[in-house]
Image (cartoon, rainbow, N blue to C red; front, side, top):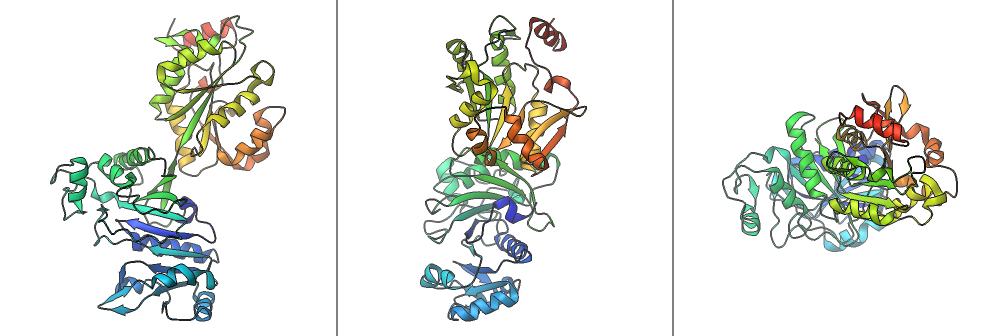
Length: 447
């Protein structure tokens, strides 16, 4: 996918790029993407750009130019770099007054700002006066270059490495590890320093591998970085590729539907024995193995007993008072309301589907991260199953629905559904009767 899609850039935004690992090349690529969409793109810096970097943009003008001249240049060239003067082979930052006032007077669609310097290194801990992010920034993109992994942790490879060594004890000279990069990027005192209140944060891991072990290392950094609530998403890719962003990792929460009456079973089916605990505990364990952090178990019938079983994994529970007549829709609504506001999508999991597999969940999460769809459904031999993933954009319709089933909303957006073909019928099967229970235990090798 393109950078503007991965970052979620909207018209009228002020986008500040910080950190290290290819800020200028990323800004150039993003500017050209937006210009190809017909946008008028203002570009500037709050630090300095080399003369060779200035030449990467179609037009460069001084901040002393009147708004009319800048607007005319945008109309003809689509991308205009504004600087505060070129001397000592550097283009310097425009005045603070220009940054605060001029963009509103110029006929532009977006302002891109290189707001940090890193001497060409791949990872950075900012110094006390850095980064110089405009107060008007609406989107901040902290960056790191993935080629830093395995390099010596010293001042030759990491800018201001001493600050990270002092803060976290990372040993100088040791190979840089994935968790160190994540910590540097997500820390409010380092990667998130000076981010304006209200600005979105999307981390960009530049130079990530397309596949294999190195891509897995980038995914690990993304998951660790998302532990910081200020980070909305982490994009992986290479600014020099034709489709730069390979995937975007966002927070996905699980809603486990466990409120049913179990009328055909004659007892709470989610509390039936399964391996070393109950069916519910087994399902929660599979979700944990899939690296899902946010989970809500929706309770109803036998709520206290269900909550007690869920407490084994220290997950949240939400009681659905309408469980007896509201069926799946009311339980899903209860679960969606209980998820944190920074969750981007919900994985809807049936509490009576004990053979749910981490491989299936991982495949759904990967399809979502790669932008293949925003409703992701597993399919076995052309038959839809569970769990399924639903992006937050559809939640208002689901929450407003007063009758029927969640599929009524989902089916309205058939063109946005992505089907993940899986090789297991476990996505189709649940435990609804004693015979189902015996059969699922047999299929799972439990006798």
